[in-house]
Length: 409
Image (cartoon, rainbow, N blue to C red; front, side):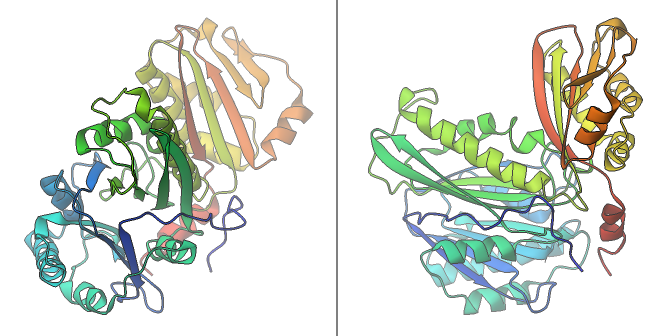
């Protein structure tokens, strides 16, 4: 039985209509029975553009390799499927994508290069084209209303406990543009990215090169700033598709003020989806908010923050509401960043537990009360520079072990 994350929102957000998109959702039986598991999105304009960021895992899935090969071809179809990741399936897995892309191309009268894929699920299992082909043949496309957006977000879930979506509005050249996004992710979550699929759609008119810069700029403080279990998936993909249907001018440079509001809205959308992913971490009971300051540079700040967030000993201590700051000392010490022991300060919930190279007297009752809550903040100042980073993680519970021990059962 799936236990709903304690951070699950009360309701799915109301996502806007993005002109130029049609959406279809169905159950094709790829892995699951009795639930939707296939989502296809038709981009009905010729001047669309796409940006994407993919996993850094050296054994990426066939869908990731397919998308990398075909970028930046303007997208006209996107296929998303849950249950089988099509990873480590070799030539047979690639052939499935070719067969499905050709089938879509003939039906939609487009080129197969304009078809993109994203899949999630079990690694290494035989991947067959038949379920996808049958599902796509029966698919009914419609303008994505809020209910259909929610259905799509639910269809791509695996161990997730709630559907994830975001809606943002921005101004470009005095015209209002929309951003809609859905995502899935719960485990195998570690920068750079995770067993995570995230899809963002906008009616803004932005060419590929600028769109790619904008997406990359939004990553460090969103999808690259979360960690559930330190495992980097073979499938993680973030895609941003612009239909260009809004009536607005197209700027020629990334930093043109015309895009200021859009960049901010895109950052909010990415942060919102990333936050939902980490708060749905497998077996989560507590959210970890790691704030690292005083580092030599931003790279070292992020490295040290992630070392804390990824430490099983830190995560289990937080799960047990144990103010064991010594485990934080261990985590930053193994991060191989510049530090001076006497300069380090460690705080839990705003209370200084260690400073000047040793323990400090602190209000035990106040710290214990903080640790008993759902959100735990750990702040570390390395005292050697001015760089900082913020990373979200979660505790490690018995439920995480149960979920992953039974994953294929």
